[in-house]
Length: 369
Image (cartoon, rainbow, N blue to C red; front, side):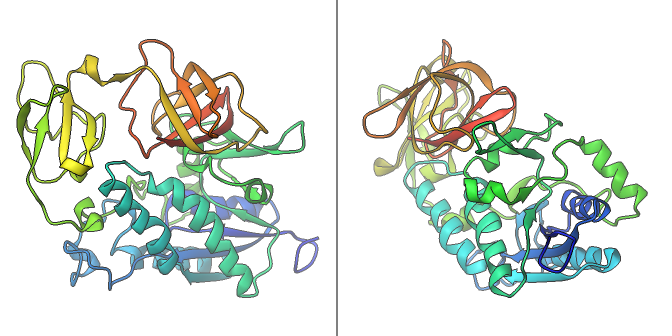
């Protein structure tokens, strides 16, 4: 029995987009009592030069989840709840977002690493502070739901298991690997067994305003330099031997594995293979030099299992299929050495997440060291 009677109550995180809108609609149709909630993340007082003092219409949103166009998203979420006849609340999570996501983003880039803010936001803010704020405001609920493309099921050992979505092209389990067992235990993913085309068809059939709204493509609508907040200063592009190949305006503008936007013409394309933050240097190499035979992963979370297997499929970025046959070797300091199949992987960027799978089952993951 739910908090208000026989129906079980679900708190649905709404962004104003089609996925969370259909998630709320499906849960209503399944007989749940639904309450819509949204996070307020944007802070007009943030010192972001490309957005400060401008209206939302003057700054391209880029269909991002963080940007000055947030007010329109919140209005869309409120309109959806009015149409569905369900309660709706907004919670200001901007301080927590600034502290745990934006500050981390800046410090990681300045350390020469490439963070994944969406992974941190999901575990800490969207699936953490948001439902906690609702409960603190006196909104009891049995489950928390979002429009993510993933699945959660009880496993044979009693642990909750996180699985890839039926729509492989839209699967978002990579971004969710840091969810705890406590979070997964009360989590619903209504879209996990649907394809994106089915979700849009459902939205159109129901006459939802978000039916044809574009998907979010990034976490920030403005210039990444805004969030880093460093004035440009000239540094060097060098090769592995230290020979100077050219100059740039700051190492934090680059990430390992990057090929485009380097601005150095050579018969064979250059890739960013290392970043030396202390000397403001970006190390470039050929495609052959960009391959990494093994690497170490720290801050490990075993999402669906108690301990790592000896071998698993591996993803080091959200797109594409997991690479099978990676060897996993626990190290004495609690980290994990990962050895992909020969010749290794290209674009292994410290700060990004390495996530491990066994078929559809997401085993766990961590941060590339």
